[in-house]
Image: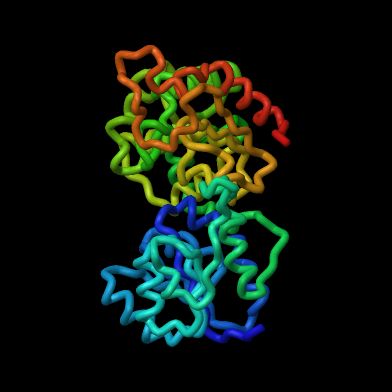
Length: 346
């Protein structure tokens, strides 16, 4: 097997996917401890992962030709291409990476020196295959084996200290972070009024302190949670700005995170925070995590998982968005009670 000296790892664009690639990146780091390893991708994703000491260099990619120039300057002898796009393979090829490892898809096999086959069923359809395993197979293709599927992430907990103390945080009371949004689309969203009901129940029965998280483009929708609550949130980011560094620190400080299937789920799992993930249109089998303190909540309805961003059923129909609307507040509350009491879900 070749020994590599300069290794490039192209990251997926979604933050959750990039975090699921970290076990594979760690495997490469352990197999080639003396190599110079660079991670490359979108600015937010690169910044988030680079803090975890997985790599020696962070490269923020922009336009295609600018990215090609940056990669050529790096003189990489190996590129591990996590994204499945034609563009990612093309930029690695034109960027002069000597060996290019990725999955054969989107007509890009000719651009790869090592083309892996996507797992498929007997009928040719894509096999449901956890993303962490998908990326670990890329690492195995360059002799970087790993039995650990734990994601890697670091958080500076002092980044949350001023926010919490300024809001009147009491360390003796449970801290619960709610993440009602989701960039994928509305089909992933558990109803906002149920998040509000859950928050009020947790305040009433557990004396909990509630943080409502919201990305900048989700603030208007997520504000419905605070409006529907009887209790007052400790921190409400539908009404104020947040940063990813602060979010990581708040997740690390929280006793429990309740979220839809989105990037905050992966942040919580990587940081070891107790976690409830509510699934609707998406299949949790694609994103199975090595997280013993996660409870996943899924309801069985005939149309799920459809993997669609918006529910295709007529809103006037009683079955509209039933994958989420059929999940009662009580079910999530019971899971929260289990985790706050020290239990875990195996």
